[in-house]
Length: 139
Image (cartoon, rainbow, N blue to C red; front, side):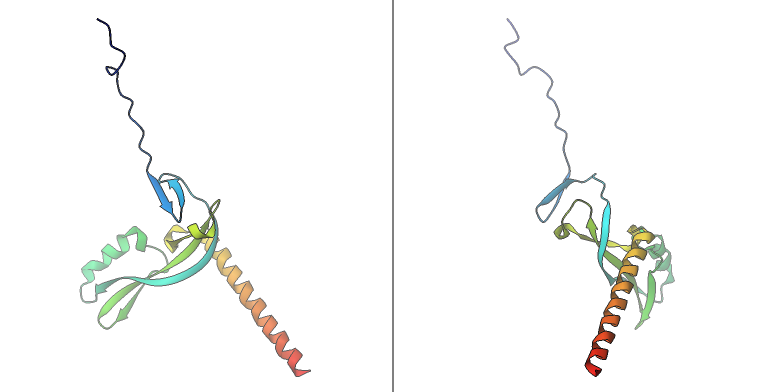
């Protein structure tokens, strides 16, 4: 009486792939992304701590997402707010609709410097064009 053709062997376990999705694009959770460029920035209040209790302060400082150099505590009506800067990131190999907001602490300073230099150059060009437009009207 033979083996009967199957069912008695070991089953192969399927490797479970942890996928993420955004706007119809999928990738493995373990995938590493490279930043192509910064598209925009914003500052947001991310939490409130009661002012009298200084025991909370070390917790804020020790929290990795709140350790960026520009994090500031602002006194306001007996409370403190933690403000953070976020950057809209365009990822290499992905379209703009898959861009994400990332905290400043996760972005390399060189990329932030390049983004700010771009903004400065655009502002200077805009000011020059406005000045040229005013001169043209005077003639």
